[in-house]
Amino acid sequence: EVQLVESGGGLVQPGRSLRLSCAASGFTFENYAMHWVRQAPGKGLEWVSSINWNSGIIDYADSVKGRFTISTDNAKNSLFLQMNGLRTEDTAFYYCARDMFGGGVRGVSDYWGRGTLVTVSS
Amino acid sequence: DIVMTQSPGSLAVSLGERATINCKSSQSVLYNSDNKNYLAWYQQKPGQPPKLLIYWASTRESGVPDRFSGSGSGTDFTLTISSLQAEDVAIYYCQQYYSTQLTFGGGTKVEIK
Image (cartoon, rainbow over all chains, first blue to last red; front, side, top):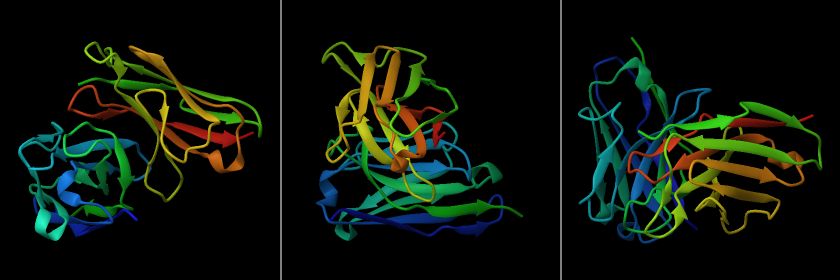
């Protein structure tokens, strides 16, 4: 059974950093592209970042470019999101999701974690 | 970025009746080289992550009931629930993957009338 479990969320002050993790199981992690998608409480979905199977293709939303860094550790079947310079508008549930088409970043997510809440507030 | 606009923002439908959700993209998401529309639909129930329903605009994901169908091409798309069930109460999102800058519609909330 495919499982994605996010962790690392919490309350952080503006300008500080946070690192999110997503532990994957039930599939061959290194064969898939992965995504981070966020959702502010009560709001819609916003794509944040994508990474392909070998980390050779990485993309970010303009709203986080230069502040967030996506990465993977295939040995640990894990996806990460390093978030620096956090702003109040980054407050959201952060979901990791698997790309259904395998290693290339295509953009359709067939499995999602339950999310981890990041709250940026002073 | 490709802007996705959904309508209506919410709708209330009687059990067993049809629900229709529209999604319009600011530019075509039809890729000429493979003649595929790079458009997906997701369902999100309260307190849950999104669930993939449809991709390539009309291909149903495995396990999704056949009362859900997707149609459209180019810039205009529709998600239809042919006979609304109580468990279909949710927010539905369209998403384009034509551009690597993925974008979602604002969502349509479906309720029981």
